[in-house]
Amino acid sequence: MNRKVFISILAAGIAVSGGAMAGMGPGGDHDRGPGPDGPRGHIFEMLDTNKDGVISKEEFEARRDADFAMADTNKDGTISPAELSAYHQKKIEERRKARERFMFERLDANKDGKISKEEFESAGFFQHLDKNGDGKVTPDEIQWGGHHHRGPGGPGGPGPDDEDGPGPQPE
Image (cartoon, rainbow, N blue to C red; front, side):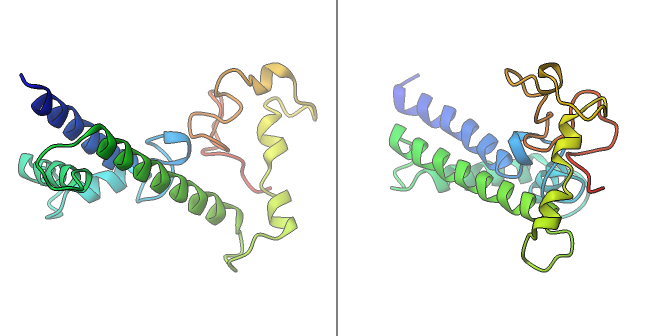
């Protein structure tokens, strides 16, 4: 297989997954964040273009082709390393903006378009870190080397033993 064909196939696969990742929740988690029932619902809705409750091969291929076309900025039918990098950076920026919107919406409890000091304080960040509720945070509760301080949903996501859903809950 020649190099251009290989890069094109590789880039198409990355482009499809990059498009799906743009809908991920904070920290890249598929179960939280924007979209109905989390990003998996958002991704499903995005791919199920005729809204029949299933994603056909044609719907999937149409999205793949659109992602490839978006990455192939010079429209030569291949994706160069520079084009792939630019496409990837664009998707990273889209995810960053989505995480910011998601965080802002969670913190802006009264939905006035601003986060007051009271809203920020009531987000329960300390309570989220204090897993055992003893009023102290230990290194075991934070586990900075792993993701437990953020939980699988990224900043504010639940830890492995949380039962209260995503992230710090207002008190």
